[in-house]
Length: 238
Ligand SMILES: *[C@@H]1O[C@H](CO)[C@@H](O)[C@H](O)[C@H]1NC(C)=O
Ligand SMILES: *[C@@H]1O[C@H](CO)[C@@H](O)[C@H](O)[C@H]1NC(C)=O
Image (cartoon, rainbow, N blue to C red):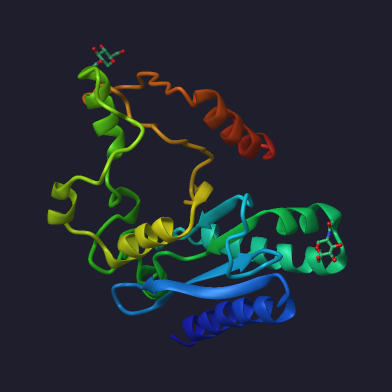
């Protein structure tokens, strides 16, 4: 209990102190609350925090999707500290990144489960036992279906009504609202426990499955981005 309180205090302190230390380029904000009411806190880096600058790409990084996968959360907190420290030190590469893009970091989208993993292992899901990693609408299957029925658009697919009849976690909803309010062009969501990069459309076209290769028109871009991440690591293989 005490250990968890100290960790929580440290996490909050880190976020507050990043904002305080890097006030010219960093801001902390909340995108909503978890099932048990914890703030979903984002640290944002930009030369104009809080505003979308025309033509500046918006990026987001989300961690701790599974409550017990704490490495992803730690990595993103360290990334935020790194960006702040290096900006202040005058690192040209980091300054250019912050001056020309907007970076949003949500270290924990599943803080409820993170809070209890110290005392007993409750696994990956949120407080309602929903796997946040599987709780977003599955638009990929709709795209595949429309491909088969030629003549249907696949570039703009509304969320089907049936999705809302299912259980949508408050954390999932907060992230969906966030995506709607900021025009993100690049995102990554971090888990931990494996050396694997999966990119959009990683579902097989054939429901029963196997490892059917299902490329999309953006295959080259997706593979390039995933490769850039994986190849920077000694042990990843693409
Ligand atoms: C980034 O922007 C700040 C504030 O305008 C400026 O002082 C700094 O020199 C810029 N850094 C780079 C590498 O362009
Ligand atoms: C899955 O792969 C196995 C072995 O390669 C094959 O025998 C089977 O027919 C495949 N199933 C489907 C649905 O493609």
